[in-house]
Length: 496
Image (cartoon, rainbow, N blue to C red):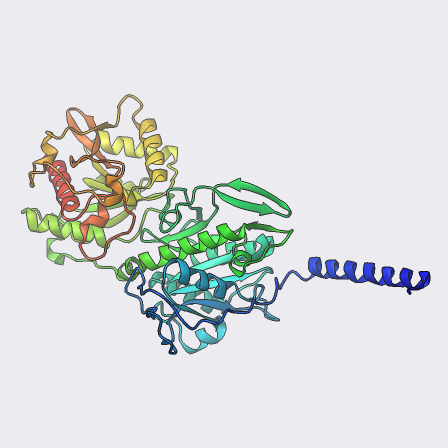
């Protein structure tokens, strides 16, 4: 029988150790927990393959033998001191285990020290590491060589996932600084709800999120950096990694476990689907004209604006080559880049503008564009991938530039559809057909003095100017109809 004094001592010890345990949980935030034990896996039913031509180990039907080693898909970057990179022990393993169930494909993860890798080779190959992943709690920094190597990796077709474990501000600030150093010329922006990453596998419009102990419903929050119409870098300021490991905490900012896994599924599915796009965009395909013809050539200049104006000019070169083949016009196959504040703006007869996100035009840019169009210039505006954000921004500014004119749909009988090719109908992508069941071409325009001076396509044209790699989940017009439309538009501009 326990005496009263012994009971009091035991109670004090119990309270002390409970308080100490809670204090340690609040203090040691750089490691979220030990990895869970993996379940033994001996059999697999069904057989499936990845959504793109990456190496994969197919899951064979009920074979009692050791399966081939799956290829590496995701590489977790080692950095910092005292295993700073290992804030979560099993997030990468947990994510790929879930991918194995949802996509029915098997990949494996690996860990890589960025500093030691860069010492051996200056460029990380996306074929060896299709996805790089960084997470943690505390501040970090990379040296100049590592930053250059990461940028080249992304420009070569790789993808980087950045996760703020527990939603910590310290690592968020480090990510923001790193991204600014890698891409001073590209904006980090919040991915809009119509971004393909929210529709690749699961349709994600609302998620369950948590700040400290309080849960709430919200739109998903991801930030990104785009390279050639492909999002090559994802930043989550709300914790994903803990959810991928299957645990949560009553501190920090995070997604619920189930929504973390859905977000992870969609990010991986997006990367797999867009891998051929990244590989294709890693090579600029430009066709240059002979120098002796430059004085008589027709030039197109692409507008550089504050948003993502897409400096990948290869698809515009494809259009110019088609125009050279379809007409007798001496065409410069090397497009120019120009800002709306450049004094040489009025020397180009034809301007091309594109993007797939919000953008801002200054008063001077709006005034110059108004003068350019009223003095005989021509503008083709192409909503790259058909994103809503670009469409909203463009309509806002064109209304300010021409308050007394309306952007109206061009009639199907207008001469613009018959200058070179006789276009009665066009083929839209599958996703475009979900919102537009018609086969009629859809262009909008503004006329001055009876002639159209501005043509706007809310359906993507540029990806249809090549027939090599398709762009998944694109709201656009297919090849070759898109290139026929564009050549007709240029021919109309030259003859009117």
